[in-house]
Image (cartoon, rainbow over all chains, first blue to last red; front, top):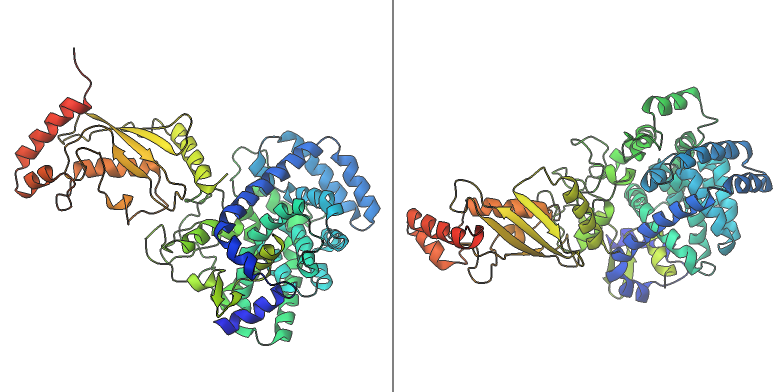
Length: 372
Length: 157
């Protein structure tokens, strides 16, 4: 168990030692992260509304300046700006909506001056070519990219990941407080993906090369997933028909709240065998009755990672936030009141002979390092 | 905004939306404090509490929904599992059998069910429990009905 976790942790803790922070932060962490998640959503929405007027210019200008991502981005954004104007008020819908990617892109490029320049390029690259470039450009955090790209079938996370993993490498030097909130919120949302990744990688943690190959391979696959989710304008007829037949308009009143479920349908099957190969019981995509659209504990909407998360054999679903909180308390499933069996799969910091090891991968532990 | 507040706010909206769904329960939040709620529940029919309207006071902890809310009767009630003076309720789901999946609404439903099915083996009201354990159903029912009339029914005339 410990020998498993040390290789993972060593990547994450290359530069700093999180011991003293971790101890302090751990108690408040879940509450804070929750807070951050809410803040991030609010900010995203606000920036969207704020940008509504002038954002067309901004985006086209930005795209030209970068040279790279050109036509596709512009067309997409102008399309979704039209949508934006229809739907000023539906905050949650927008976050999960098709515009999610665009919106995140805005916030990226806005916050970039305070960020590292590297992350800028990476996000541009990401918007250009998606997964494959990610894999090539980032070095040690390949795993986090490929995993998050995979699970974030709603395209939004894709950009942030590029951003974030760069920060992973660069340490906490140039990360400023104002962007921390966003970053950490996203990091937390992605922590789930890291678990997934770790779960796959634990069997062969020993051979780094193999890991690497595995990650790159999955990266290429991811290249299919998010790309198809992203380029609606340049997409094939099949994708278009997928979008059309389901009528995923953000302004559609009957639209299900959990839009990522759609994306899940065509991005998850790619990798489902992979999950099942490992300890797939927890993450299996099989249907255990109807999936609720919101977490029965906190009543927040389930995102696509949450809705494929079935921690207990009774089939009771809940979001990862609440699952984590429950594990910190009594660890009983709210559905059947039995102890959760897969407790060690969760990210937990353990003090072991003075050295703190994180079972969970990069993003979570890094978020604790940088946040001080 | 902490998780408990967010959750209570969503429950509040849920209650507003489904007000008509369950006419036996009327759940209202304190105007200034979302951690304080009161509920009015109707005594279940075919019990000595039929026709009475009982007031419950909820005090929700910060750790809600991981910790159960504290509930007590404000209306006097003669029931083996309710303390006659303080209104404290002995109910497993308010103690160790609590699950975060429960809501304030479902707690109210559980209390209504408890009124219909008393558990005399873990009594908070010993007189009431003893009557039931001695098999004096009639004595229990008449006592309970009397207190329902006295405390839980609107005064006539």
